[in-house]
Image 1 (tube, rainbow, N blue to C red):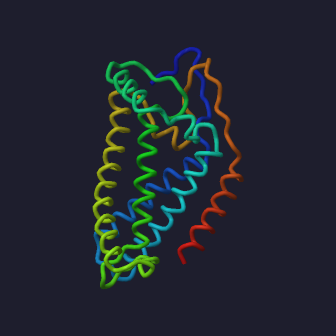
Image 2: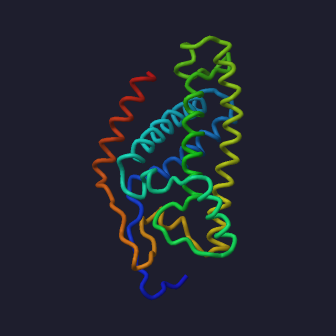
Image 3: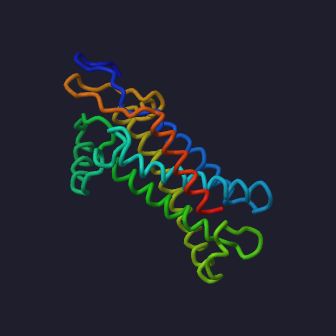
Length: 224
């Protein structure tokens, strides 16, 4: 797609947010794959370690959504459902969306994904198949509660796979139908914006790293 006169290349995504996005995708694939394997040896370890890593990433992202770069903050992209519905109608009508960062519909999807992943990983800590595999906190609850959480964990896992597939399909539709490449900006951090739009405030990476170390320490100390 050619760059119109007056447009400019703008840094819209910080490196920590981009690393979070792709690392989460890899860990989710590992977690989903191992979930359908026999829980012997490597697959049990893969599933548990991927789940704990996802939990750390999600908690970090929630905190970063409050103190991080402008486009990473929930206050910047989380709108009410009416705004998301309006954006959907504009998109179907072929009208462009010019704001920097997530659109209202994408913002709601981010919140939904984070909420589902947080619930999924939290339940996984207490899950157990009663034979081979047990979550690190499964002994902290009764067997009946662990069994219930295991059932919900398995159901939500399938729902999350469906949500992830839907997310990929929507991104591809944006690319093929709207000619809007949402993948490349999440790789490079840059996107073409209108000249009248100001560049978002990007926080330094060391702040995100210190926050990640702190979150990781708290989560691991709480689990193990």
